[in-house]
Amino acid sequence: MSHSSSRRIRDDLEAWIASASPGARLPSTRELTARHSASPVTVQAALRELVAQGVIEMRPGVGAFVSATPHIRPRDFSWQTGALGASGQLSAETSTAMRTVHPDTIRLHSGYPERDLLPERLLRSALARAGRSDAALERTDPAGSPGLRAWFASELATQTPARFAAPSPQDVIILPGSQLGLGAIFRSTVGPNRTVLIESPTYWGAILAARQVGVTLVPVPSGPDGPDLDALRRAFAETSARGFYAQPNFANPTGAQWSASTGRDVLEIVRGNRAFLIEDDWAHDFAITTASSPLAAQDDGGHVVYLRSLTKSVSPAIRVAAVIARGPVRHRLMAELQAQSMYVSGVLQAAALDVLTQPGWETHRRAVRRQLRARRDLLADAIRAHVPEATITSIPPGGLNLWVRMPDDTDIDRLVQDAETRGLAIAGGGEWFPGEATGRYLRLNFAGPDPAAYERAAILLADALAEQGSR
Image 1 (cartoon, rainbow, N blue to C red):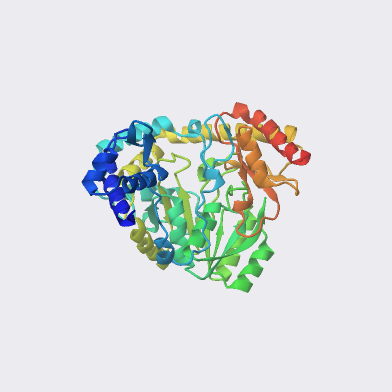
Image 2: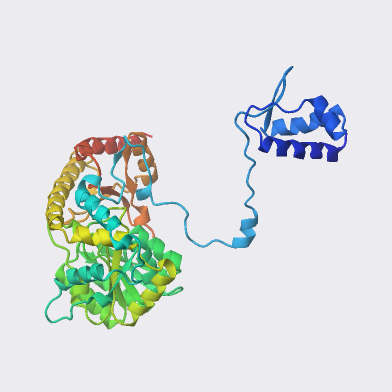
C-alpha cells in the first residue's frame, strides 16, 4: 500500500467534504479506486483515517457519509508561543465580580447596581434625542463635548472652598469609562517600572490597570476610617513613590469614607512628597448617610488627579467618565488617551449630559439613596441573623457593598463554589488585595436584584459555610 496514494485520496476527499452537506454520501470505493488508480486497500486506508478524525461515518452495507456533526480540525496556536515570548504577571481571567451566573441565582457578587436603581426613563428619552441630534453624525472634540466637560467642572466647583481655585472645563477630559482612565493615569503620573502606593484592600480594576502598565504596587493598609497615615508616610519615605491611588469616598470593596482630618493629612503628605493623589470617586452618586466630599476640591496645585465615572450611576451601557487634572500632567493624559481611544462617542456624551441636566436626575438620586439604605440594612441584618460567624467590618455610609470578614479557617474559594451550587453568587475578597490578603473576606453587593431574597441568601451562605465544618 502506498502511503502517498492514501494521503492523496484523503486530501481529495477532505476537499470534497468541505463543500458537502452533513449526511452526504461519499463516492463508492469502486469509484474512488478508478478515480485515483489505486487499490481498494489504499482507498479503505484513507477512509479509515477520515473515520478516526470524525469527518465521516461508515454504514455497513450502505457506504460512507459525511458526519452529521462535522469534526473541526484542532487549531494549532503553538507558533504564538515563540512570537509572544515570556508572559507577564497578568491573569487572563475575569474578576469573580464580573462573572455571568444562572438567571435564577441570587446575585450578590456583581459590582453594578440593579436595573431598578438606574434612571431608565430618563436614559431612554435621552438616547432617543441624542440619536436625532448632530452628535449621531459628527466627531466630537478629543477632550470631550464642551457641555459635558462644563458639567463635570461645575460639579466639583460647587464643593470647592472659596480659598481654592475652582476647576474649569479646560481641566476636564472625557474618556470612555474609568478603567481606561486608570491605565492612562498610571502611565502619565507614574510610568512603567516606577512605584505607586495603593490602599489595601482596594478596587481590583485599579490593581489590574497598574500591573498592565508595569507599575510597582506598594500596599498601604486601610480600614474603615481610611489609610494608616504612619504607614503612608513610611511608604513614601522608603519608596520615593510618584503617587498614591485611593478612594476617599465609599471605597470599593469596603465602603469606607475618610474623615475630613484624614483627607487633609493625606493631602499634606502627598504635597510634601511632590507626588500625585489619584482620587477615584466612582461612587459619588451612591451616597447613603453622608455626601461624597472629593479631595480634589481642596487642591489647586495639581497634586490631585480626579476620576469620576457615570457607568454605574447612569447605565453600564453609558461608558462615559471624566478625569480632572491641572498642569503638565493634563497634557500628558490628553496625549495618552488620544493614542488609545481618539475620542468618546458623541451620542453617549449627549445622552449622558441630557440625563444629568434633567430635573428628574436629582429626584432619581434621592430615590436611589433611600433604596440603597434599605437594601444595605436588609442585607446586613440578614447576615447578622443567619451567619453569626461573619463580621461586617462597618456599615458603609455609601457605595454598593458590604465587606464581610469570615472565620480565619474559611476556604473562600470553596465557599464561593459551594454557595453557587446552592443558588447564591458571591465574590471572594482575595482579588481586592494588591498583596497578600490579610484575612478571609467576602464582598457582598446590596444593590443587586430582588432584595426580598437577601434573607434566603444569608441562609444559603450559612449552609455553605457549615458544610466546610462538616468535611
